[in-house]
Image 1 (cartoon, rainbow, N blue to C red):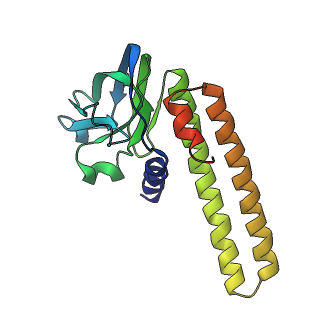
Image 2 (image 1 turned 90 degrees about the vertical axis):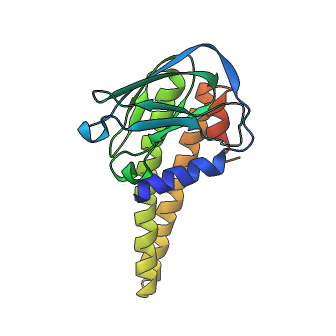
Length: 193
């Protein structure tokens, strides 16, 4: 659950004032859910930046473990179960509504891809979760060591955490530059201006 909250907190902090652009093609989203628990349940696809009132949320019903929809605005959306109590078994995920076929697999560890920006976003999600896990562990261990009086080792671990964060920042910037101007570039480049 911490992973879900951290991911959404970081995502929410980065979106400010993005205006949607109409797609020049169709963005078709095909999704899967892991088991029959979701049969007949609703999945919500809505703009990540809820201040964007020009784009409405879409709700689709899961049938035979699948759902489908089409998006017409080039922007970042969040895909999640309508029932928030299911977040522990279906991690919400963000996708880019760009022209093409986008796949979404909701589960405890959700994934997506299928287009250039969505494949990059998936790589960034995996990178961010790995970074968050290691960075948090290094800082927690450093804090424990410092509280026990082992400040020398605590400083070493803190430096490792800081170096890890520098590498993460550089990789995020490179990903943003790799996709060029657009909603994903705006999203990723806001992290480290």
